[in-house]
Amino acid sequence: MKRAFLYSVLASFLILAAQPALAAPLITPPPRHVEWTPAAVPVGRGIAISATSPEERQIGRVLEQEFRRLHGIAGAKGTKGALEVVLALAGSPRGKAQLEASAQAARYKAAPGDEKYLLETGANRVVIVAETPRGLLYGGMTLLQMVTKTGSLSEVAGASMVDYPQLGFRSLHICIFPNTELEGVRQAILLAARYKYNAIVLEPWASLKSASHPETAYEHTYTPEQIRPLIHLGKALQMEMIPMLNSWGHASGMRGNSAQHVVLDRFPQFKPLYEEDGWSFCLTNPAIYGQLFDRYGELLALFENPKYFHLGLDEAWGHRGLMESNLCRGENPRATLTAHLKKIVGYFSERNIQVFMWHDMFIQRDHPTLGRLSPANSIPPFNSHLVLEELPKNVIMAAWNYSATTEWPVMQYFQEKGFPVVACPWKVRKNAVQMVDTSKKLGIMGMMQTTWDSLDVTLPTVGEAGVVAWSEPGFNIDAIPYDGGFLNPIRQLPITSLPKLENTLGPGR
Image (cartoon, rainbow, N blue to C red):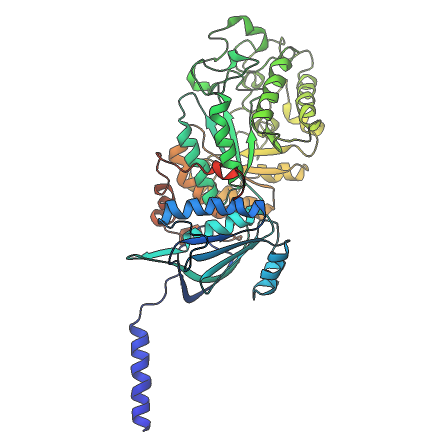
């Protein structure tokens, strides 16, 4: 009897050992706390979204479209055997009841921030609870990655998780140049949502027609009606949509190496609005505010009263010392700049809108540790770095650096000056990881991943920066395979037939 029992135990062990171990799906960004279970949930006859509030239903419509696009799984509300996906805001009666029934309730309540979510699978259902619609969307983005298919069978990996981001502000800066295809912008917004970004900065460069100042854009370029769907797309994906207009340097409406001036190449009568070389606005000419304020107003209307606005203000070459004339500096250049900044910041303060500024003109060029890392910076006689003391402390400093791969002191400098700070890397992976890691170490506001004139090339870095921004300090990004972890989501977003998720902002069903 004893020998037979031992043979039985050994046989059972061998059978179990021969079975493949359940592999947890690759989720990017990886969830903060997760328990994978062997009980996968079959999808069966489609998914049935269960949502009661308008906000929950809007997220449900996004997920329903994405289940169909990514997995060929259709919505099947009212169909027997469909997988029920429950979306519940934590403050609602149903959300409170779901939390009370969860073994993860205490962990969820202890998790920081309002972007956290709880996701649990059960018998023929998945429950997602979150504080906000944004958190529900993040839970849905995770759920979409938990689906596997074997033959004709689709199932969702069994799991119980609580997840939340490390950095509070995770934004993507996208330029729209005259040669930019809007489908490329759409692709980038969708990818940012996939990596749980919560803000998009859109900067049109002579690419958006202005009703009040048609001279500031090319004749054959985009209208507000063409840009508006992209803004609504971001809103449908629960992102802050932030307009940008350069308000000092880059007044030419173009990049420095283009040798173009969008206005003066065609309308030389506007020359008094600009410095002698046309690169920056002439800060001593009050007529510039007629143009700036009109264009601000148009952007605020197009973006439907945004919470933030990016003023640019970088690379003001003339005030770096290239120009000798005081015509656009005045007798006291620092006072001229102070007055300009107070005027444009005041415009937005009156409207309860917080502004971003690029940092470079507020760093002393010959500073032994801070200077010479940007192409412009502050030098005499302008000494624009001294203007910092005149700025309101709610101005957000967008500190950009595209090459540093070791800890960069500039972000801490502005933090210690009392300003909110966002780290702004570009397309180099080591630079982006270092900048975002430093952001987490300092506990600053967040990050703004830039793309500039290399939107397609930068997309993998968009994913990498998003993952690091979400993850806990010390997270090793090398744990995620580059091909399967960062390239696959890009491949899932072809440049044609991209989803029109802005349609989910329509009336609830």
